Length: 309
Image (cartoon, rainbow, N blue to C red; front, side, top):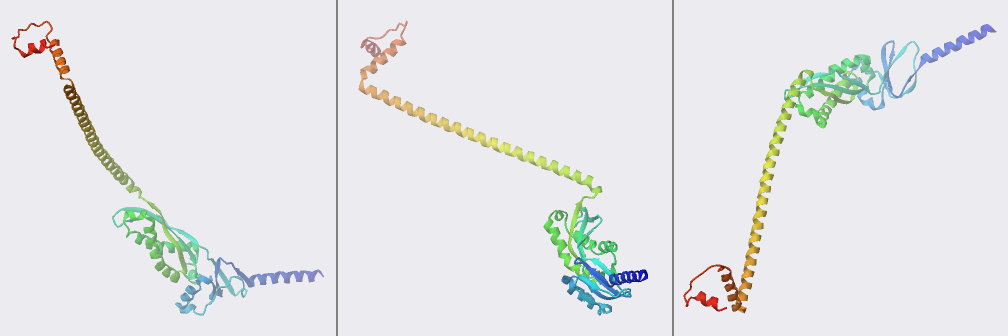
C-alpha cells in the first residue's frame, strides 16, 4: 500500500514536471523566439509590428520558413527539444555619455542625448544584439552619431530654440528607424537632446565675454538715458519759455486794454465837464509851486489860468 502511494506520488511529480516543461506563457509586454535544438522555428511578436517583421524575414532566405505568431498567453512546446527566449517589448531608455560638439559658427557645446526604443523583431535582435547590455554599445555606435552629426549643422543660438532642435532630430528619426529595424530589430520611439552645457574650458572665456557685453549694454543705457534727459530738459525749457511769453503777451494785452479803457473814461470826462478838468490842472500846478516865487507878465496865460479860479 505504501509502495503504491509512493509510486503515485512520483508519477504525479513527473507529470507536473513534464507539463511545466511543455508550456510557456508570453505576456502582453513580451515577444519570443522559439528554437528546435537551437534552430529558429517560430517567433511571437506584437500585432502592430507584424508587417515590419515579415519584411525582415523575406529579406533573409535562411529564415523564410520561420513561423510568425502574434498570439500572446499560454503556448505549448516540446519538452527538451524546444527552447524559448523571451524579450520585453516595453519602451527602454538609452542615455548617452556627454560629448563636445562644434557648432556651425565655431562654438563649442557639451551635449548628451536620450532615446526611447523597443524591440520589435526578437529574431533579428537575438542574432545581432542578443542582450540589453550589448544594446548600449549599439545605440552608441548607430544612434548617437546621427544626433551629433545633425547637431554640428546648427548654429549656437539654435540649440536654445526647442522647436528647431526637435524638428532637426525628428527629421532623421524615420530614416534611422529603417536601419535599426532591419539590422537590429529595434525601433526608436522618441529621441532628443536632454543636456546642453558649456565645456569647463570655455566657462572663463564666456564669463569674460558676458561681462564685456554687460558693460557695453550698461554704457549704452547710460548714454541713452543722458540723451533722453537732455531732450526732456530742452523740451521743458521750451515749454517754460512759451508759457512765460504767452503770459507776458496776455499781460500786455490786458494792460493795453486797461490803459485804453482809462483813456476813454478820461476823455469822456473832459467832454462832460471841461471846467472840472481845468480845476484839476490848476490843482496840479499849485501842488508844485509850494515855497516858490515866480514873476509872470500880466498877459501870461498861466497867470490868467491861476487867477481864473
